Image 1 (cartoon, helix red, strand yellow):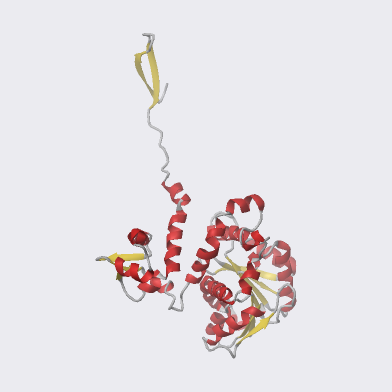
Image 2 (image 1 turned 60 degrees about the vertical axis):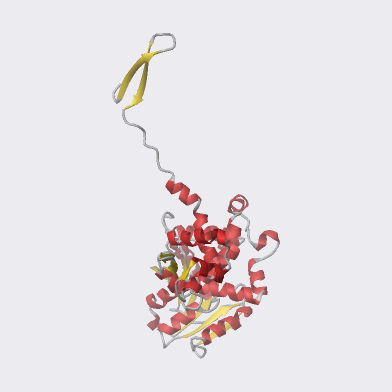
Length: 360
């Protein structure tokens, strides 16, 4: 037979036996990629523990030895060296002559004393999301949230009932919103407009970044009353209290404030399709003719093949909400058109986030 060679030997009854073998051995795929994917939580949990411990903030003050870090962070000797060297291998620490220091991005973004700190969202991921994601299989089988709601609670009610917990959550939202907020401030034609309202503003990251970049604008936030003191403190820290106001309300119960531009960032994905349509209708009613609505999220690419973050964020909505899901830009444009908006366009903000702009 073509492609095979024959080998002859004696069978157990003494007659010749013929065996065939492939001319070329079959190539077995390496399991490395699959094992790395399946065990990826090891690295994630190691990194999140470093954030929780304040390791990067500690090293931002200068390089330290293992023994110094054990003392300052309260680490047991048994695991400390492997923990620190694992972070070196993961690329977030450096080690030279027995002293550990932060990698450049970790030093800039994971020091709690720096204004660019993004660790708030990672702290929340460690404290809340990490254990909840352990029940993803159950969520996929039941379609039910796996957070506080699993035991009769409510995520937002729990967060908003605890002032310190709420403050931490709002800071986490600032961390995840900073990059898209700066891009939004740069990529939208703000010169055409005089006023804006950020719906579901949290701590106020988006209004602050837009106001800093465009001195002619008057802005405001619209969020639940419990958010107001945290928002006002944040706005005052930038000296913008005369240009950025706060409107207290519930966007399902109350009309949205009127402005030339309304922004909904990381809002629509929290809600089911009917609720998404309701929020878009409220935005349409609040805008003047010629006004604009900006919606941004970690939108799934239209082919649903490439933006893993958008797809994983949608699974996070499965974990965290009763009906929320992420969506493609094409989905969003279709909903906007059905609401009455016109002239929609899509603008990338970051590697994973995009905004859809629609005009009234």
